[in-house]
Image (tube, rainbow, N blue to C red; front, top):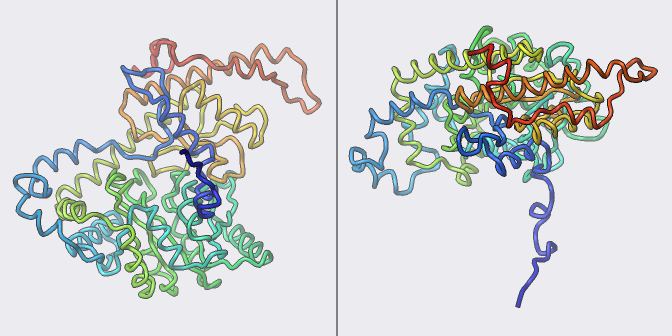
Length: 480
């Protein structure tokens, strides 16, 4: 006898859409999963440019692992430690692990500040760390202010299971999306007028998706703001070691040593997913200057601990000063090279990116001039062409709550050089085909606004199939 599951038997969380999986950000991933690009097995597949992953230094990691077999309990050299690591570990974490992470966090910040290992709380990646801090600081219905554009996963991480709200703080391209005091005040006052209790402000520094850092004066202004309002400041600094050019990264931990501030309001979310390229290890960190938050978060951490085997290996790796120094240096150099090569390739066909970017694993690409109409619907239409025809999974700005249609986040550090060249060649063909279509179209009718009116058929015809030989691309010819 067959039974059909009745959704009324499930919870509101199970049957609701709080995860946010129905956004273009996640739809792009699904398109890639159905048709993933492979240089030989599926050369016409979708290239994954929606994943902010750092794969540029895996050779350094692999070399270290080969040279340090005792760091793993799953090798003959490390097997003697297997029993001690495999049995129950306190959810405070291995002391060696917490010491090594605290030291690494300081090293990434130029050793201008130090971190107390006893304030480090483990979590299952930055996802778990953000949810943990939300549970600690806010009740269902309370809100955090978040400057836009911001990472789409925050809608899941902070809201889905906690019931917390996120209130966008609108930032604009006219000043390179800088966070201003005026924008913060407006968002805060709007929440107040709507009878919403604002418990904190969440910032990402360096920014995802902008790839920019918050300068010292902006950080001081933010600290002043949260101090005056007596609300918490959660600083996501998971891209701290990806800053590859000037100006240098400035951590909130430096600012609170310079400015008078209630440090009980300051909390840092960190991870090794981006800086080291270890998202699969699920190493998330909550570092709070508030004793009560540390105590509560540590109790919650039992729901998402980092495995003791991972802690053991990472403690050994991050305690190797020579390796850490070389890794940070090489990572910056390789990110700078990849960023330069990718943005130069885009520039050859007239595509610009946010010029203040100097960090992260992505660019904030400006395709506003390719929009058929300057609306979210127009951006979505362009995105569908890019994902379905050009076969690139890039993420539209609207999924990052950007208020200006036409911006796209494009990740460039999760692939090899050859894949990047293929991606650039596809973009080149698309843009050049667009320019060719526009020229004869100028002879068509004009609207009263003096803007050219394209038909859907002309717009669709802008696409040239990615099956065309890569060697045909003038961009690739110029780069080889």
